[in-house]
Length: 250
Image (tube, rainbow, N blue to C red; front, side, top):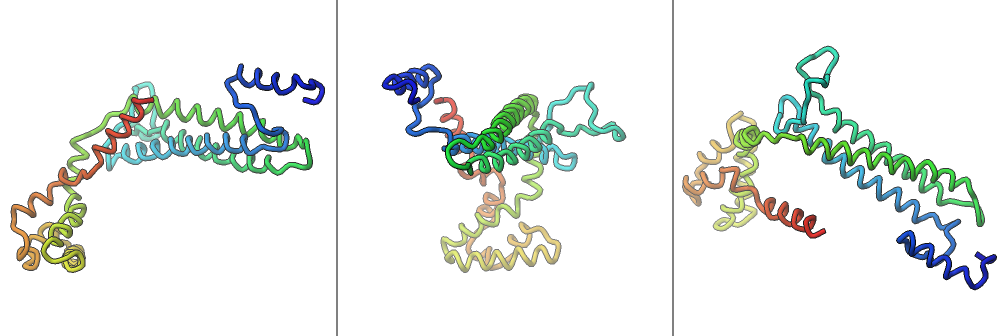
């Protein structure tokens, strides 16, 4: 910069403007935090993608089957078990996230430089920046393709909710009873009933509906309403709508 004299800063500003970059306040040679932040941000993005991918992988499992990844007869899920449709893409995204995470350590190491111009750190960045960029882009590409081909098994989800919904509904029963008994007393009653039902291998709903303390403050109609899984969506629909609206705004 010194060689350019008074033209140095205007030249830097023009250069940054052309590349749509901000003009740095100080020299970048020993201030590597911006590079470490870039690598860390991409690693976090890739980890978020992996979280989604791993959820799809789990819900795609044979015994759960609430979602199904896209499939072609040209694919092979297993060399010995022809029926398998392994979610290879989801597994790859998780692996890419772990590889991306490893680049953060390199980027942080590159921040610890000696004196004014230590290119050992820069050479670490050559690897970390390039690799984390590749990992993030590939993870995004794979997950996008996976989601576009995803099939949601609504009937299976409803069946799971019906099969295990009784346990989910205990919170609502507590809060409804709390209107008359108070939270602590209502919680203690449902706690005792639900724990006893599990010890005796009786459904939680049957145990609650047979308990005199519950029936003293609630009728069968109210209980039936509380044990309907669809009444326990909470704010999930509004949250989804808010997220989609924000994304649409961008």
